[in-house]
Length: 266
Image (cartoon, rainbow, N blue to C red):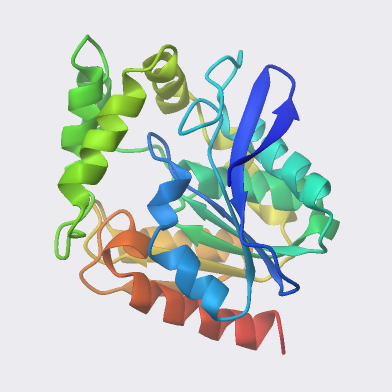
C-alpha cells in the first residue's frame, strides 16, 4: 500500500515492506518510478532487509507541484523520509540522478545513512557529454516528450531488456501525460548535479559505485573517478547498460550484498 510523506510543495510516495531488518531505501532515476526496483527490491527483502522504495518528486505517485527539482531537493526529500521512518541508519541506493541525491543526503544527515550504493553516478566536475545533453533536450522539447523519453528509456537496456519493458515504457508514457509531469522531468534534466556531487568529499559512509559495463561513455573510468572522489569501491556489471538493477538484477544484488556483508554488517 502506498504511503505518502508531506513535503513543502507536495507529497512524496513510497512503499515499505516493513519488518525488523536493516533499512534499505531505494531511489529511482529521472523519468522513472519506484517500480524500477520491481526485480531488485523483493530479492533484497528476501535477503533480510526492510526495503522502502520511493518516487522522486514529480514522478510516479509523488506530486508534480513542487517549485524545484534539483538533486539537492531530492536529497532533502530522502533525508525527510529517513527521519519519518526513524528506523536507524539506512543502506541508501540511488540510481542515476538519485545517486547525486543520495550523496547529498549522506553529507546532510550522516547519522541516518549507513552506506551508499550509487547506480550510475557521474564523476564530480565532469559534464554529461554535449551530444547526450543535446539529444536529451530534443527528445523532451515538444509535445512528443513522453514518447521521446520512452524511446530514450529503451536504450538503457542493451543486452538483456526485461520481458515487461514494452509494457513498462507504456506505463511511463502514461505517467508523463499527467499534468505537470513533463515540466518536472524537463526541470530535472536541466538541473545541475554539481552542488550534490561536490559533497562527495564529505561522505564518510562506505560506498559502492555500480555501473553497467555497457553504459554510454567510459563506464569503467567514470566508476573509478566517482570511487576515488568518494573513497568507495567499484562494481562493473558485465553487459549492463544504464540501469543494471533492472537489466541484471541478480548480478547487481550479489555485488550489493557482498559489499554490505563486508562493509556494513562486518
